Image 1 (cartoon, chains in turn purple, red, yellow, brown):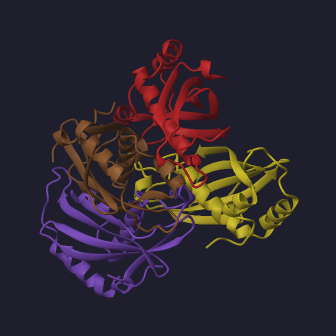
Image 2: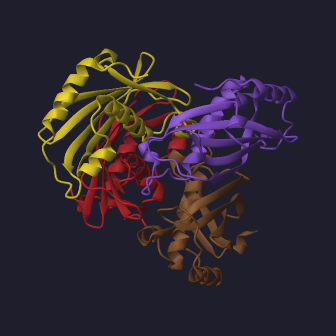
Image 3: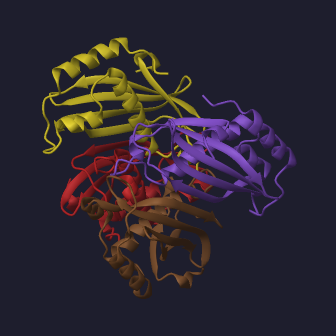
Length: 145
Length: 145
Length: 145
Length: 145
């Protein structure tokens, strides 16, 4: 995977409170960055937000997350976070994310969500039309600003 | 105010993620520590929890917070956080908090809450029996463990 | 104080992780927002960054912070944070901050910093030329983007 | 893997600020919990702390983290976090972690660290005596309090 494989990026600047005593971003904050970037990705697709999903009684729950640390981000760095839909299961959807500082690839990761009944927390089929929207989006997503 | 003025303390250890590049706790985290200690203080009084309050349709909302930094806490420090009810208004209640590392006084602060209708967020009289419980508690609170 | 009294604003969007069970931003995060906005304010003045200050052996340490909560911010809100230098002591400098959601005033606060020797943490006179820069900046600061 | 497979546990209570609008712990905080539990695990082994390692010029850097979400933790839950050394590479060491609420298994995860030169961030052989200490520790670790 490389920077060119992502058609969607969200950028943010590392906050003072996010860097630790070693001067590098604390590991857990990368999941927050992933979440922020994923929220913007999802907004761009036009699909129902998590708040709307909750009102509809079916929503996407995080099932799995993983992070690989290649090089650390530091205070004040402006990071570009690529998000890309990488596949579907019957009830699940998988995204890959990568964080760049300019051309340097710092972090790779993935997020897997299960689409489930809000009350029962039991998986239900991921909607066909969402699948279609995401597939189409991956081909045409413009860069985030 | 001194350590002896508090009859309630809650202790916690500073997490790695809470210390910044200067090796000291980031300022905002002291409000989290205040909140954790206040939650334990409130639990000790036996008064209805914030979740119970929300169900009852009237709850305590933060109105004001202040912090004075005398000396910084560092990673791995075990801090003692004193909490004390310091006075009442018609709809409000005020707490003072102090953070100690052993005998050293690091941080002082206060939290002011307004008791209000959950939906309207408009102040209603702070309950007389809560006032009585808090007044009594200040005289008899055992040390937290 | 009103929106018109600030010539510097920094904007940010509330993250999912920053809203609590009541659907509103947890109190402690406002100090993080203050810190983010203050970092951008300071960058705009052109004065030495906190990292540069540390290398110079004299830096600004937080001495006091206070927050008043008028109305809560919520997930996904885009907030405008005004920062303004509000006065000087011999070794200290005071800033007032206000958070707006459109025209609605949500939060007010202040931050007081002491300029001090990094090792001894003892106050030293706040530099006259910094004083001049800040005074001038308040009159000409362009809006942040 | 089951609760019985861990000889080391660290317990902590979920903070208000860590639960999101759905009333469940935000995903990123589980990495903070992992880090807190790992810090206590490492302290129990008696091996050099990360601060000591940094002074020695060689330290453990996070290389990989993963989390699987089986069921969510909620505000005020007291969680038991099991930590276990699960294997070694030439320059790396792998830990598995699981989070329990009573008997209910909520979260599983792993952390992989590389032992590396602090300045060059290049892997160096994981010390044989540390390997021995960890192997021995896994057989005799008493429960954390």
